[in-house]
Length: 146
Ligand SMILES: [Zn+2]
Image 1 (tube, protein in one colour):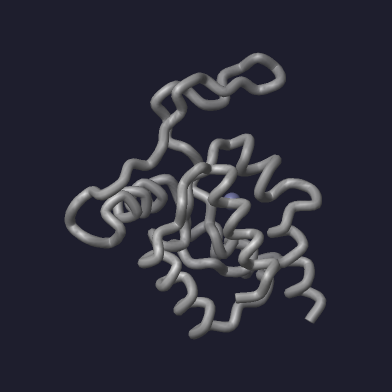
Image 2: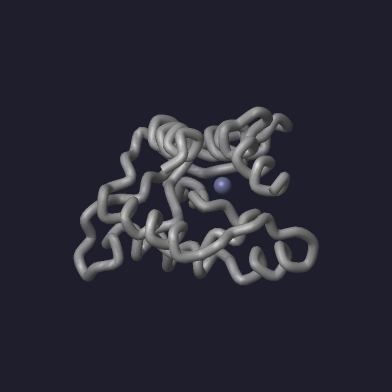
């Protein structure tokens, strides 16, 4: 695994405080080995993103909690405190599920599969993992350059 990818995975884990278990890593690694991913743009990105909605997200979260099996083995985190917008409006209510981040991002055509999602607090998600100068941003930039 390239160093940047390792650092990215580490960043996702440390921001969330949740490890990606070996079994899930293996599925991710297999997918990256078996497929060629390039950055999606325009309509291709739109159509990939439109295949993902809140009901699919909830299904993936359920599968993530069971790690693709029949028994729940972990709990998707939920907001313990409300998150507010700058305007003071509520952005996330107590009890709402954390964001589902696509580890291999949607921008790259990353699949809508349980092993490709990871919970992140919205602040760690948008301003962190997808933020300016993020490791993920650098990785995606490099892929485009090829
Ligand atoms: Zn994300």
